[in-house]
Image (cartoon, rainbow, N blue to C red):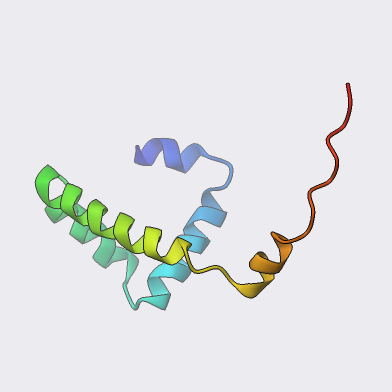
Length: 82
């Protein structure tokens, strides 16, 4: 999988975003890689971790910034006719 990621055209953008997120939570990239090396093959542990992440993401998705809320209140453009 790492080899495939290395060949994708947005690798620099991906790494930049990943590093920004890790920095926000004060996690070093090497720490994340070490965590995966230690726990990545423990499918029960990783499944539980993903469930926790999903619950957190789902709870945050209900909270939308006002700008998105306002944008969703605009009427939709008319459907184009064939």
